[in-house]
Length: 261
Image (tube, rainbow, N blue to C red):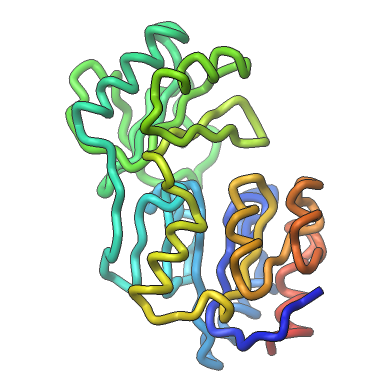
């Protein structure tokens, strides 16, 4: 059931939520968000994607709040207000451990504040033109601080073996593949929202959030109204206040038109 609260900020996960399966935002949804901004509502994004990668999918949408890399980086308008990074040394240690356990050819991505790095065997930009600016690296001499490190791991036991040696990390698997996200301990969307609320003077009860995956559960539970997409995992639907239409059927636009505008 929707809670009785004032809405100041609409906060959206990207993949499986604001983005359709083809990784675009429908024109109906964009129109609804434009109308919300014109009426004074704040628009926010909360995603596991890096900032650079995220912005490539947003097009003309210019969010007021941007929570990226799973909560490791927060931006309000054009100003960074929070970051939580692995040191350059710790980043090298995590990459080295992943290669030791999974093999030297394991695929890895690294988010820094400025860039998104990858070592994919196939250039993702050839598969998806919307991929955004990314930098190829073999990580042989990588010396940057990392907001988030993702590793492709094909079984849970291997992931647990790596995680057991990284007690300073949170390790979460993405539900749509074999990728595991490594961030510093307690870097989550919900903790980032708490920081954002304090720094931006936005009551958490005045946020309506939208999500579909396991990493969204904390966000949906803590905000004033937590909304699960029709395509969300069952675990997400169970904790949500409301379940709406799917990401491919303008579920967000329909909800906004009926309940916000």
